[in-house]
Image 1 (tube, rainbow, N blue to C red):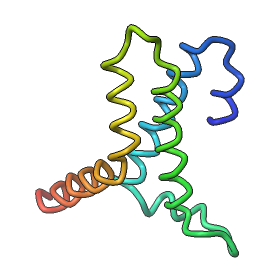
Image 2 (cartoon, rainbow, N blue to C red):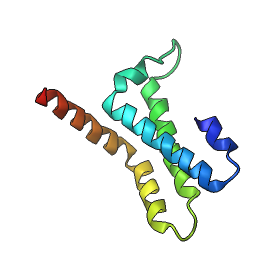
Image 3 (cartoon, rainbow, N blue to C red):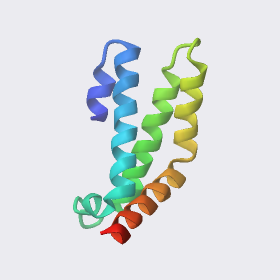
Length: 102
């Protein structure tokens, strides 16, 4: 997904792809972290760390590609980048609540 985003000709397309990457990694990190751990390879660091870093970076890149007249969206992506781990914890709490409801 990151390689696709880097190949987009327009900033708008790249921004949307980076947003999508951030959303995707945030969802899987928070709701289904065990799925991310399946990609673990011997000798590599904890897979969730790299996954989360990619999500944070994607949100930061999306923020950097926002046009000057889109300050609100830029702030949103910057906040998602800086508070990514807090958002992951919030999604994990939602998952725990789903388990309690079952």
